[in-house]
Amino acid sequence: MMMLSFSMRRKLRRPALLLMMLLAVVAAGRVFFWLVAEDQPTVAAAAKRQSGETEQERQQFLAGLGWAVDPEPVEILEVVIPREFDETYQHYNQIQEEQGFDLTRYRGKRCARYSYVVHNHPSGEEAVRLNLLVCSGKIIGGDVCSMGLDGFLHGLAYPAAISE
Image (cartoon, rainbow, N blue to C red; front, side, top):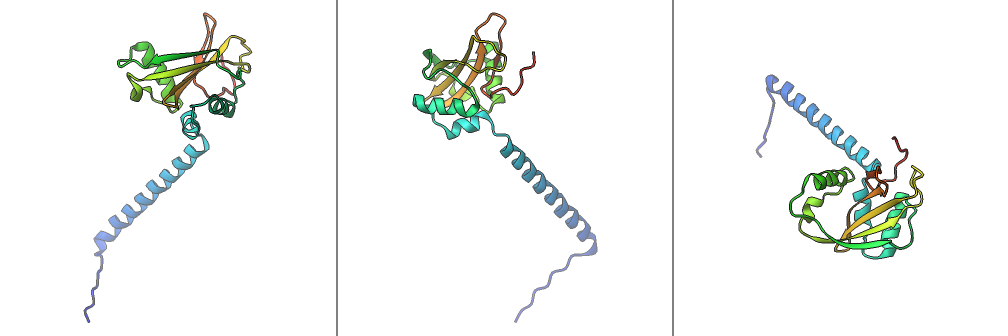
């Protein structure tokens, strides 16, 4: 019978212990950030769980975000996401990225934009529209905007408080 034995020299014990401690700290940090991310889901994460193919599905998605909108869109347009983003589209995509979407993967694609009248915007403004972008039955982005000249534009998440 053959017996194998392994021992660490004294000089190797300390670096090995430090490496194990470092790995434990990194693992704990990843678990912490994973739990924080679970507590604050993005709008895009909600959209992944909800198709946007039918009006009923779009209404469920918007109601889940807290929006009260008309039961039918006031406008449905076919839009083409540009292949090259100008400054305006770069800013718009930044809003999309902040809510977990990214329109760069849809460059050159035809999508539908569903526009709804919003009845419960916290600003109290009445001329507010919610635009929802849908590509191949999938919700890929959207915004809420004021129709006024000095209006606002923000993502789909229902704002807890409006700071002017």
